[in-house]
Length: 101
Image (cartoon, rainbow, N blue to C red; front, side):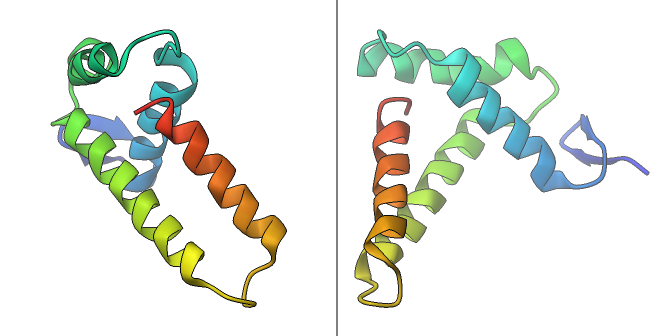
């Protein structure tokens, strides 16, 4: 059975499609040499160019980034519930994302 996000066909789960779109954006599309302004312009065109059947991919990317920021913010408030090494993984992921937004 196929589910859709807008008219973008996905295999089994809506979240899988967004995950693929975000991973492709982060790993294959963004050039770290771009300025922040260039990234913003190119992010706006990413969905139109590479996911033409998706609906508002830029907004979906922004929501994914905001969700990560919210979880990361929660992780920062944890005391001994999480090891320093695990918190560092979250901080490293945040630094990785900051270069690609």
